[in-house]
Image 1: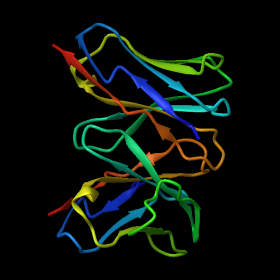
Image 2 (image 1 turned 30 degrees about the vertical axis):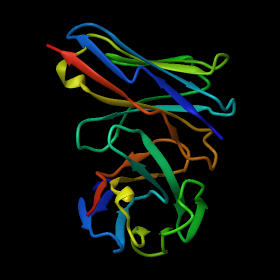
Image 3 (image 1 turned 90 degrees about the vertical axis):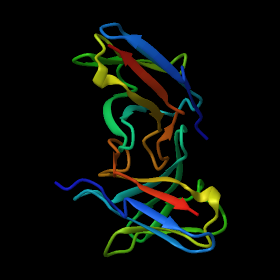
Image 4 (image 1 turned 120 degrees about the vertical axis):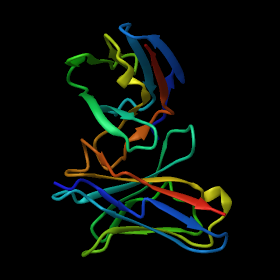
Length: 113
Length: 112
């Protein structure tokens, strides 16, 4: 069981570029969650998706951020026109039933220069 | 929505002593309370969880207690070891379509 796979592990973008973060959930898991973690801070919820559906995006900034979980392929978190404040670790988690036992991926560390 | 407060933010203990981390939550509908351990530069890993139908759960040196009336839950680590040093996060959810809400974390340092 490969676990939750995130790539890339590290991503450097210049201000104004786009960042694409990918997450493949554990086998058998159909619920995906994205969290953002700033240095020395906790995990802040961004968005919750199931296949082809956004269930809860209450933690997503209204502009520049979007997420999808297509029928085929990984979930994608997209950040357009990145700014320095977007620098953070972005973690994806998945669960089988959307209730218990979130498993986290290793995260993508985004640095905006 | 749910709000989870976690204390203390940092905790230092001598090896072999016990460590206790406390969390409070605001939503009385919450019924699932996991704890995650995050080592430096790594992913959060689930170490123990408790559901609202029990008051205490133990797994070797780790235990979690839940007081639903007071809306607080605690992590207890006994006989601490240097490898217990990490950041610990508590979380809560109502197990419906509401995602886990995390506390801000406790940095535990176990001094040999």
